[in-house]
Length: 313
Image 1 (cartoon, one colour):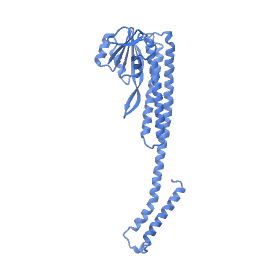
Image 2 (image 1 turned 90 degrees about the vertical axis):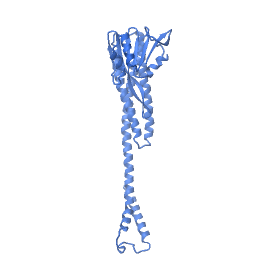
Image 3 (image 1 turned 120 degrees about the vertical axis):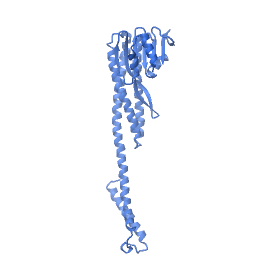
Image 4 (image 1 turned 135 degrees about the horizontal axis):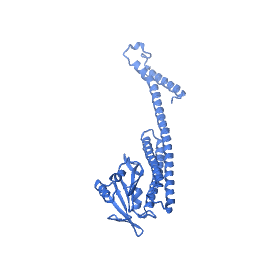
């Protein structure tokens, strides 16, 4: 899908045909749309396709008539009926007359611009637009990181009362999300550093503060991702040990019960053997059956007391 936007009289409007100083937003474009844009605006097909590869690395490439900026943006993906987090590439292509964005799916990083909810956003101010996208991207990382932190706290509460692996798997998914975030944020940091040195993108004094804010937000997101990742790793190790210890306790109690209950079983099995009754104690006594049961129960109680003093349960 290809949508075209332009700032007209201070407000963002969607237009039908490309014009100078417009923004062309390409979301999961078809092969036909890619070839049309390539031929019409002189952009390499590979550069238009690059953001559609989920494994594409973040980078900046300067060509003769345009500059390609590739960064990773956070996204929500559904797995097993639950929302988890990952990253996908976002391509920003800047030419002398217009700016392009290419992404595999709709991203919240760009939707606010399309809806005109970003202050001081003008499609003809290309450098500022790039920095605003990068700033919005960094804030989205921070937003999702806070959500991940809250989810990990909820899972931690469940783990206090659980011996199942489900909660540990949820922590594993959250840790995977943090790994994706950390890797992408570090790649984006390299892009920001290179952005300062790219001569094809003009640096305006009024945008200096915005660029500093982008770098600060990105570094803060990296620090938060590292902190949360370390917390999750230690939490997973701790609760894995707790669950294993709980299982050991359960198995020990079951073993003790089995030992205690095996004593009457042995006695009853002996009396159930097909032997001469004269050789069996209390076989001729009318209260023999009751005596044997009581003795078996007494021995079991003694064994339970001894095991209890040994702190087997």
